[in-house]
Image (cartoon, rainbow, N blue to C red):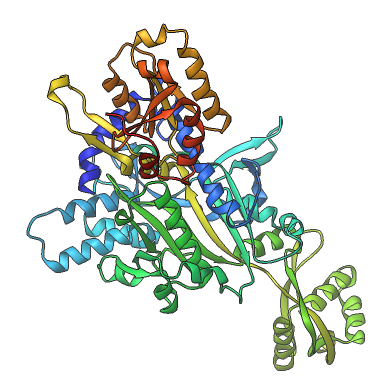
Length: 629
């Protein structure tokens, strides 16, 4: 973290000067939590997203959809966002317009306490544990923690109100009359669940199946800060991998099982420990990671992040604590990247079980179950309502008789048996039944209403609701981490009178915003009639292969022009010099080594294409073409 903190001011300065990103609506003063990407930032983000598509959607043969940014109230009510999508907020008692997100304030306070000199081991463990659990506390627990440590406003030391929940969704009326309540979507995942049924049809009704979506999400953050890491409008890339709940083993897991990762289990966190290195195979076999499918996507996430230039030593996977994990989840891990702000959660990989599909199936009254054909039909004994009991139910409940009878007939075996057993003991049983008009009503069943008989039936299908493994990527946080991990500064050269740090963004060629810059050696080259011809050959071929290039024809020295293109992370620089005018060859410089080779102008585009796709390396180029001194 120290190196990232040291470079923080330089990276921020570079990003502003070269317009990687700036605050949205900045000329009007801006609003916190909104950012605009400039030309290099937009290109970098586009390339990261394309690499994500290649790595997951294409390689894993997934489907991709694009759903709406605005969702109606019933969708987000069913998903739980209307009732539970909240963070805790505390206010300054002397000025309630000043407010803070409680868990982040608690983390900051614990961070400061851990910096105190001469701390006893038990205090280090205590403060570390509180910091690790900051976003997992209940309202009552975090209230007690704030009182215990007498946490006050960081601005002026004033007392704070008790934590209160604040829903993070942006409400928006739909239609001219505003009678339909909607919200800007807080995540892209729900759109996938809503369209699961149609994607399954396109996948020939086969599981497992992956569906992806990339798009904007919106959260009305309490106190956005730290630049791109906490925004109110941000880009997500999410995958829902639908799988049979009892079949989470994966053939492809064997191919990644020996990959070593830094894992921070919930047990280690609760003990105040730190992460450890372990292969994903060991983590799954020991039960630390719940299943092979989850382990596979954890590893694929790691390989993706490393392919972007994230340093392996500064990437770890933290398991959710029992108190922060959703009640329906089987296991959850966050990919955290170390930055100047500490360990930053950039990806969540969760085994969400069947919760979302069940919730939408019940709320929308739509069957989202999966029916798996059995190779050999099996004969089973099942409990069925007798014909006489069905008639009596119809008579007893009159206009509601038919829907109540159908409800009884569709009940899972365990629930039907539970009613029968209760009636045998208590002579009656009351249950709530959802009626066709959307209302719910209690009905009391007596022995004659639930008379059942055992029947032998041949079963040719098994019905279940698929479970879901969900990797969820915060693209903007990943981009910020890539900027920090890619940055380094070259020593200043006194002979050139350098006043500014010579910063370099060492992006992998695959995600660099521009792949190459074209430079005439000086203005005499530009005036030569052959210059446009050479430039068009180089730029035209590179562009036709899908690689963007810049052209720098300024009066600055060649060294300064190299330096300012290094700032943009451009991996290659092609210089047209006086030799070029004689033999149609140019120099090609590699950004990090600053080594140059001489290459025919017509070969620059095809070789650049091979380098950007990783089919050849720079060392291969050095063997193939002569060095340029």
